[in-house]
Image (cartoon, rainbow, N blue to C red; front, side, top):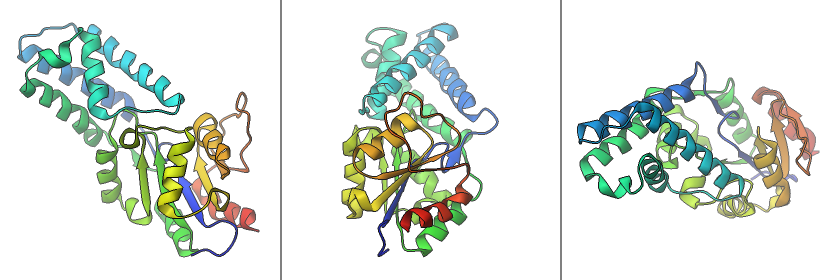
Length: 250
């Protein structure tokens, strides 16, 4: 174990370790909307694509607001909410078969249009592990459940560096909630003041980490205006991280 004043490093996932390129996020959304329209039509429920699309983005906005408040909802509940916006009671009204198709197509869209690793992600994780830091992930899951993201991270080699992978949909908590950070640190068996969190969003990553007594490093150029805390350091890319950690360690 690291013997200095930083023993653990926790990472955000999206736009920190992985990123969408080439419109991947929009492609996933379009695929989910299209698959829902087709599955519902096949079981005799013909809705205009515009209606399904509106319901999809309304559900996305609703759960993003939930996460900002530090909470989250399991994937199955999010999917039911989306269907019920299309038509009240639809989630219970449709047969299990079509609903299973919609569910599987929502999940498959992530694999059809996957994110890519940030440049240097594996190399930096390897360096930090070699330096003795305990590494963990704290991710606000979004539309894709943690179970599927965990599997993909295992395939990419990211998960092998992580002692703990915490996903908001599984915990039903989201950054900036203090408890999602505490849950991760308890699993690591490291105190907050001996830990650093790295992420790209001041309002979730930096605010949440600082609230629990962790240090925080902001990656990228996002402004902290409107957030009542400042990061302990900033980096523009992952390659800068090991040196900055050593400075904080000092």
